[in-house]
Length: 473
Ligand code: HEC
Ligand code: HEC
Image (cartoon, rainbow, N blue to C red; front, side):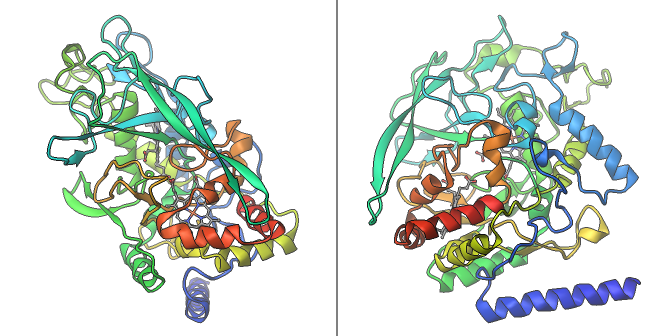
């Protein structure tokens, strides 16, 4: 039985390999296969992004359930009842506050405060023109909430939009909007021209384990192939805080985090304000004295008591592990295909327009997977996890790791057809500016300009087929 399975896997990889060689990696069509391989949910609807991989062992299943609870659990300021360690400054009190039902945040509406998964990252350009991804007084993210009556908030922001009209050669027009951020209620001084403001929307968090398990080698090979196509995709190199090594970044809009554990620790620190072994210091820039002085729940443990003078993080390692398992085991929804013929045509047009060079249809997991069955498994995320220069219109001018201010990681396209329904609104691209797949495509520039141009020159019905195809993933 086992041997049979191995033979089958070998044949499967061989077929995959042959199809790469025949039509070139990144151009292969996936037909109507489910995107997540074994990690595909059997149903859709509102809960599509919350369903676990069914092949979990009993032990992993328990960890998944625990991780789910902890993803939703609300953090509080000691001594209120709940998990201690919130703030002193923060944006939301739990993960689900920004990733509703594990989906993308709903984009902020005109006049609304920027919150609930829409966040403002900050950068700073010093006198010599050197740019860093943090502001000296406000840090790398603007915290709009704080421990009431004890610590001031950093500030808050509102959103409005600047509109332009795009007109196709066939005269159809589309309104495009771009966010304009106004920062207010600043408690530590004004933000002048040296400040870089980059808005981000919280993405859906499905299928991330699969992306974590792809080997570095595979990603480097894709980058090599892209060079021959005139693209300059490259990995972000970032510090793995556990090993202190430079490794390939995979998560976040600029691929600034190398793995899900570190991404989770960053979220606890930057978004919720809780300490971990990764970030033992509270998230309080030097100038924010009251924030620094407020005693940390970690010093005399909210969760588990005092351990002498030893540092005890507010987020225990077991919590990071549970949430990591939770994220790794979240299924990708099953494909939704109402018209197979048109969907298949959309698939072909997607490749012919050059979209598949970056939104790579097929990747394969390596060997360090959650369960044995998930090893060496092909799946279809439509990403290369690489950074691309997307042009001035999308640039935020804020570097992260080795990513520069024009570069963004190609986001996976699986599941995005369900986001609108689940989140109650659709905000595509890093700052949520695109309310439709079509708008998202029309913003593509830089390396993706010629691909966008091919899309623009298609007939209306062919453009619709590409969109229908993406919606089905
Ligand atoms: C205040 C809102 C907020 C909270 C709270 C929050 N996130 Fe996020 N999350 C974001 C944003 C915004 C991004 C995109 C960050 C970037 O790259 O700029 C993100 C990105 C992520 C990603 C990367 C997804 C990808 O496709 O690469 C993961 C995983 C994630 N968050 C998990 C968590 C977990 C786990 C928690 C709780 C510990 C959490 N988040 C809490 C806003 C939030
Ligand atoms: C050079 C690489 C590249 C090519 C070619 C490319 N894209 Fe993208 N795509 C990206 C990157 C990078 C982003 C994210 C940009 C941002 O967030 O500002 C993106 C974002 C998107 C999004 C929004 C996804 C989300 O989660 O918000 C869609 C939809 C999309 N692309 C579809 C397409 C289609 C369709 C084509 C072909 C016409 C295409 N792309 C060609 C790199 C590429």
